[in-house]
Length: 111
Length: 122
Image 1 (tube, rainbow over the protein chains, first blue to last red):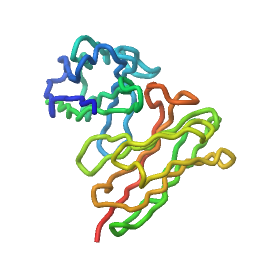
Image 2 (image 1 turned 90 degrees about the vertical axis):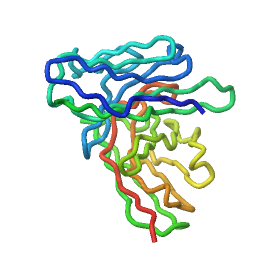
Image 3 (image 1 turned 180 degrees about the horizontal axis):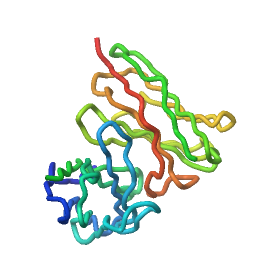
Image 4 (image 1 turned 135 degrees about the vertical axis):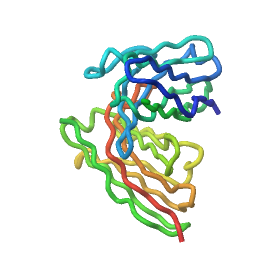
């Protein structure tokens, strides 16, 4: 099955930039989505289709995807951005079975 | 506004059964596919199952295939997850999530419920 690997944690100072990677074989050929999850809350979509933002999500959140790595970038980090972040994609590479896959998750800590 | 509210969680013995319910409001329920996603304590997200807008098509993660059944009642705007032969590794918060399409095709989940905790333990 398809595996998505994220760093367990990323620490960043307020006002700086946080980059969260999501590694997978030829992930650049797939559409990647990103969710933010704060403690005790449901996930919230922050980036979809590699780099698009849902309405209401600040422009500080951006994404890219190429080769074997997708990246979520949070610019001008704020205390409220502290959360777990998950990448996700739909693995349709098999003719017989298609699966939704989540990354292992990254905890972003704002120093 | 869109609301998804899960219920039915609780403590169950290994080998037991439980049915989760997700009540929807604020949108046309029959116009969307739905998913169940779970999260074990302190762990990441795991996709569990999906159902098409009309309930005809379904799919499951290998970890639950043959034990869990997803279904829906469009007249009552309700999604279900019937969980049988439960194991300790099924312990998790279970979320229902809306797919923006009639039949899933890789789009992101746009709305999520707050989750229902299932504990499988003696």
